[in-house]
View 1 (cartoon, rainbow, N blue to C red):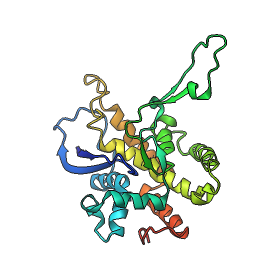
View 2 (cartoon, rainbow, N blue to C red):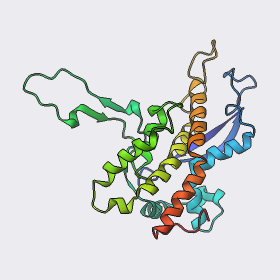
View 3 (cartoon, helix red, strand yellow):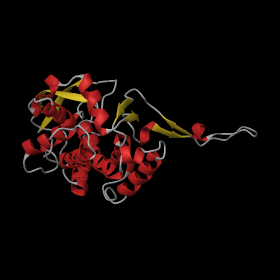
View 4 (tube, rainbow, N blue to C red):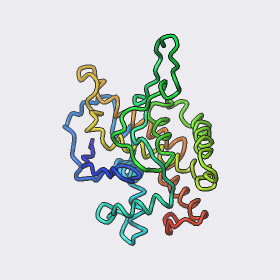
Length: 265
C-alpha cells in the first residue's frame, strides 16, 4: 500500500487548479490500519491506477508543457504564470470558489422579526473563499456534484440535467456567452473536472486525514479514503477516462479556432 506525499504550490492568481507537485512516494506501515480493503479497491494494476489519478489531476499542465515543446512529464519545471493566463484565455475562465462543496454552503432558516425583509443574498451564504481563483467555469459545479452532491448510485444519472441547468443560467449572464462557452464544451469539461476534483482529494488524503479518520479499534479508519476511491471509480464508470474527456474538450476548442496546439490528436 502506498500513499503520495505532495508539496503544495498554489497559484492564487489566475490558476486553473491548485498545483500539486510530487516530491516522493512513501510506504505505509506494514500493517495498514484500513482492514477490509485493498489498494485502490482491488485495482489490478497499482502503477496504472496511480498514473491515472496523477495524470487526471495534472492533465492541463501536461498539455501546457507539450504546447511549449517540453515532454509532458516535465510540466513542473517549465510552466509560468503567463502560460496559465494564456491557457485560460483559450479554454474559458471566470471567478470560481475553488473548494465548492455542501459544507461550504450555508442556507439560513431563521425567525425574521416582523417588518424585516430577508433578501436572497441573506438566505444563502457561500463560505471559505481562501482558494478562490480564476478558473474553468464548470469546475465548481463538478466539485459540488462530485463531493457529496449525489451518491454513487445516482451519480451519472442526474448530473447532466443539473449541469445543463447551471449552464443555461451561466450563459444567460452575458450576450454571446453560449457561443464562447457552448454546451458541448461545458459538458466535456465537466466530465474531466468530475474526475480531477476527486483525484485532487485522493492525492492529499494524508493531509486531510483520509487514512486515519474513524475508529482504529473497529477498523472504520480510512472511510474517507475508501469513499473517495469509490467515487473516482464511479466517475470513470459513468463518464469514462477523465483524460479522454479532457482531450474531447480540446478537440472542441480546436474546432472553435482556439490555440490549443495538437494535444490529443
